[in-house]
Each structure stands twice: as C-alpha cells, then as structure tokens.
Length: 118
Image (tube, rainbow, N blue to C red; front, top):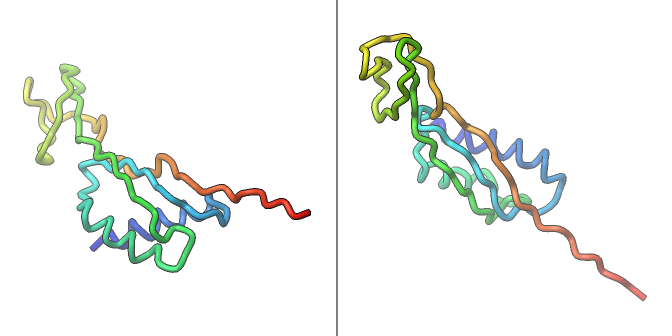
C-alpha cells in the first residue's frame, strides 16, 4: 500500500516542476530495494492524478537492479534477495551500489501553442 504514498509524493514533485502545464509523461527510476510493485504504482498514479494536469499521463518506470559491493575484496554483484554477504569472500562489510533509487528522472509537459489574434 505504500505505492499510494509514493504516487502522491511523485505527483507533488511533478506539479512543482510542471508549473501548471499539462504533463504527458513522467519517467521514474525505481530501485529493487524499494520493493515497489510497478502495477500497483501505476494504478495509484491513475488515482492521484485525476482531475489535474497529470491526468492521463504515462508513468514510465526504469527498474534498477540491486547491486552490492564488498569492501574487503571489491567484488560487485546483483542480488535478488536482500542477503548482504559477499559471495566471494563471505564478508559482511558491503555497500549498496544501486537498487535504492526512487527518483523522478524527467517529465514531459505540453507547451501551450501561441494563438495570434488579429
């Protein structure tokens, strides 16, 4: 259910940058460790954007795999399950390299056409 809160937070950020212009697409980078269900996020996006400048906009998500790096042996690896031990040396001193992202990468807005009246 945290996808509803994420959708609302993304919308707030998008609205600040759209400055009242209609939004046609929002591109997000979502890391695996955020445990976001993409279909659920899209569903809630449709709800939170109703009756506003983002209504009908496409939510395009780039899913970032979780990668860790071992401090002891410098190995990097991709993980499916959150097991934070190096598969090479067994060390537990690791850092998250990727997979913790949740960021609006870009938005596409529709520019108003100039209407000349004579």
